[in-house]
Amino acid sequence: MKIIVLIKQVPDTTEIKLDPKTGNLLREGVPSIINPDDRHALEAALRLKEAHGGRVAVLSMGPQQAIDAVSEALGMGADEGVLLSDSAFAGSDTWATSFTLSRAIRKMDGFDLILCGRQAIDGDTAQVGPQLAEILDLPQVTAVCGISSFEPGASGRSQVLRRVRGGYQRLNCTLPALFTVVSEINTPRCPHMERLLRACKTKTAIKHWNCADLGLKTQEVGLAESLTQVITTFPPKTRRKSEILEGDPRSVAGQLVDRLQDNKLI
Image 1 (tube, rainbow, N blue to C red):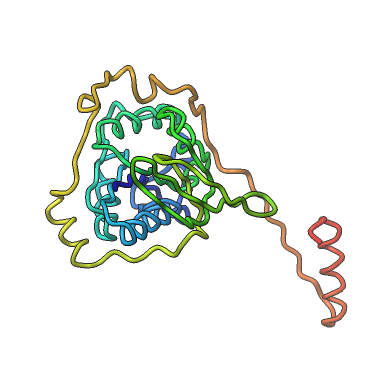
Image 2 (cartoon, rainbow, N blue to C red; image 1 turned 120 degrees about the vertical axis):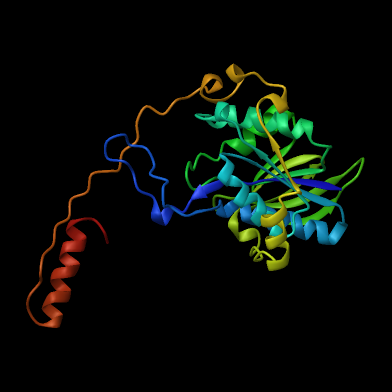
């Protein structure tokens, strides 16, 4: 059995700042983390590996610094990692990203399941998983919050619990398939220190593939292949207004309620 987990290194959103002139994210000095939903996907894969055996491979696309995210995944228990890194990949929208990932997955040695987080905290599109499943012609289930049965093999199938508005769905799905998961599926483990240090020191379990390794031309990836382009980004304008309420506690409480009702906050 083999499970491929897609992970993305993202800036810690509590530290995000924008360049006031260009509107671009300021990444210098900003800590990077594995996208939170992707950590839950990796934990789900590791638990399936513990129950059924097999291997877990992580796949990431990004700059060379994303090797830290892949190393952390190895420290958590993944068996191998692949980092797609090439300047030609810069500017990829979700479609170009999905296309590039699909070529890497076809280059990898088969799989029973692809797991990824529902969405990334830097883009919030939730598009890469479904687009990748479409390109690879795989059955897909999104927003998975539980995997109740998993039977890999030639006629493999799985039963999952899916979160939907107002409730849940229980679905049967044939394998191989692609699932996107949400945070309530599990609590991710911390990396094992010995495995993490070994992964960071040797990097022997991490493959580095560029555009040529995937059999692609530069005009087939990145901004050139993207169907959408971001024209500009900017922080919303904010206006702060303060007021000191005076009087005894009962009077101040009444004034506060009036203000909240006037602004339709309660």
